[in-house]
Length: 135
Image 1 (tube, rainbow, N blue to C red):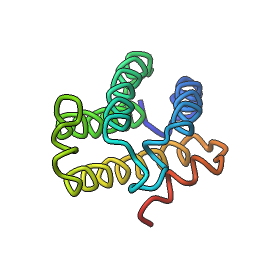
Image 2: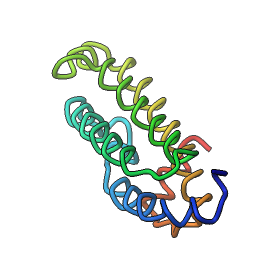
Image 3: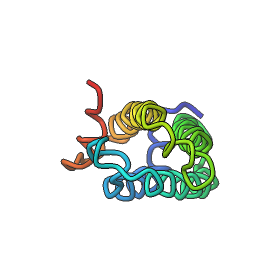
Image 4: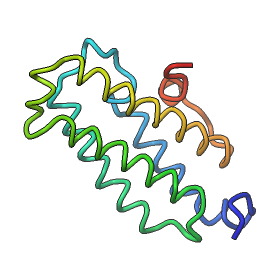
């Protein structure tokens, strides 16, 4: 099935819409870096990994949405792994935290932008903030 096929988009639109609703509430993806709490960010990324796993199981026909979800989950896994248990690594090294948060946000900006574009979704100011990261 072609990723741009109308049936694929129709079959998976509800997943994309649900995902955007969830992501627009995540401070991890849009608040200023110096205001972030290491452990709250790690927990949020950990929670998102589970959300993406559940959503991946519901995607019909694989395709670009499944790949985007896998990329988002991988970015969260990398962030959580870098943080260490109870964010010990981030507490010891603020630059490490900032680096991984920027990388995470860049992946989200790119993938969320693609999902919004492909499914022609409404962009809220919160979603625009995620998409515009590092532009």
